[in-house]
Length: 260
Ligand SMILES: O=P(O)(O)OC[C@@H](O)[C@@H](O)c1c[nH]c2ccccc12
Image (cartoon, rainbow, N blue to C red; front, side):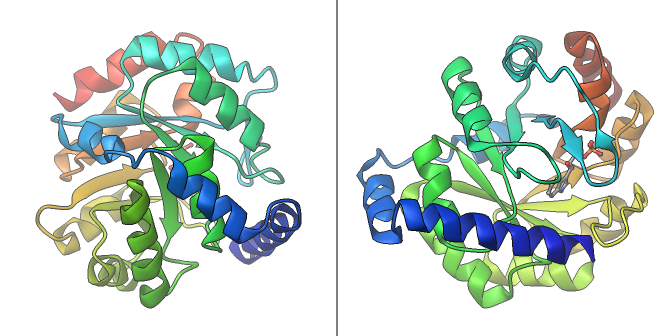
């Protein structure tokens, strides 16, 4: 199953990174940085419907989405267009992302940034902090409730926000039990890549009051965004549609219009 393969590869990447910079050293570096002020989640909560715009070159389900991949140009366009947050894939094998891309985007824009990777080790939380991330992704499909709780405590101590991603009721209960403040529902099943926009609507009722609810994946036109907003999404995470839009400002304007 692909998620297992991606997670196994993430563990290999962490092992290699640890051999270069040991955990203790990385943690000390992360803890020496100014504690973040959770501006990722503030940016999401501050709007009627917020947009997290994603920078990804490829995905396991679609292959290469943008062969040119002028990620700095894209980041600039997203910022110009008024993206509330930007998600940058750093997974290297299936999404063709990298920490270098993240660093470059961090230097180029002031928008809150989500470091989008497959978190399988506490090490990656410190990595994200040192990269200048405002938020990390925690997948319930990879982390049990106790581990989630532990990672959320580390994030809190660093001033990092966490987008806790779920796909079904059991995962949503786990996210809620762990105390997640930003809960995502992925409309794409990472096990077989099928997309069901109704997934967000179906799980909406299980999201604790006060948590920010992010609908993720599968937005392919303004009407999709409208439907997700109708289903109670506080924020939308949009990747492929924006990556394929030549005029990202116009595309995002269209999505915003649709959720009003
Ligand atoms: O390109 P889309 O269908 O708009 O989806 C964006 C985002 O939700 C998707 O990239 C995603 C959702 N959860 C993830 C977990 C890991 C990597 C990627 C993802």
